[in-house]
Amino acid sequence: MAQIIDGKAVSAAVKEEVALENARLKDEHGLKVGLAVVIVGNDPASRVYVNNKKKACETVGFQSFEYALDENTTQEQLLDLVNVLNRDERVNGILVQLPLPSHIDEKAIINAISPEKDVDAFHPVNVGKIMIGEYSFLPCTPAGVMRLIQSTGVDITGKQCVVVGRSNIVGKPQAMLLLQKNGTVTICHSKTKNLKELCLTADILVVAIGRAKFITGDMIKEGAVVIDVGMDRDENGKLCGDVDFESAKEKASYITPVPGGVGPMTIAMLMKNTLTAAKKQAGIE
Ligand code: GUN
Image 1 (spheres, rainbow, N blue to C red):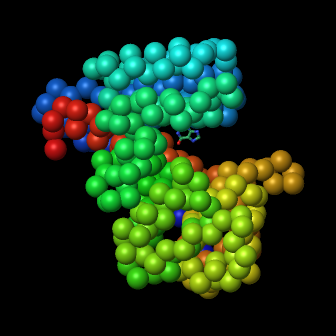
Image 2: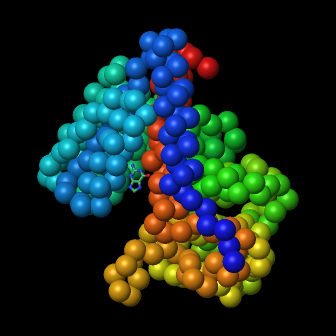
């Protein structure tokens, strides 16, 4: 029976670290950290995420600036706002909540954010830096996953790591981070033919494919660390992950629940990135 990884507890520990360092930098350097959060339209899930991000800013002692724009905002108007925020010295990090309404080109918006303020690490400059291991910001969800793996005490070096999913936000950067920690990494996706066979090789299995309960216990090696990035609904409309928790927990040594696993980590890592951005902009190492 697996030990359950408590994402809420690990997330609280990360936020506590950020809060302590923020307080110290305020005392020693007069540093004042600010995050701008931009939301366009009325997507209820995005609204919840944005509120949680603002709440986390309060918890760690950052200022947050919310820009809630109408659904009909044009791409030019949003670009203008990003440019204003790029120049605003109170703003150390800029987060434009995705998805954006379909008439706005997300890539154009991401590319317009100053890489120094890109606390999501979505800008091509920051993505490229991750490839060469010279990054300031790690994308929040994969960074959160690394921290959860670290919390188990399991050493990644030399382990077979399988990432299920190849998105730009999770799968691809996740694979790079595991590789940097000396894992032997395989990336699987919806077209992979021998998925079960590959999953069964995994000492560390990270699943981010966006399909409810897609990975079942028979696809998991005895003693594997299983990290579930999914946020799905099951046949009864109940929140669940990409992993079938009930069967998987019988095989795994450690497993994350949904909710309460990876979810809370993402915002904690966003706070960490925002503090890193503020320090760099102030020339504090
Ligand atoms: N929408 C869902 N997840 C994210 C995220 O990590 N960052 C942003 N900007 N939007 C999101």
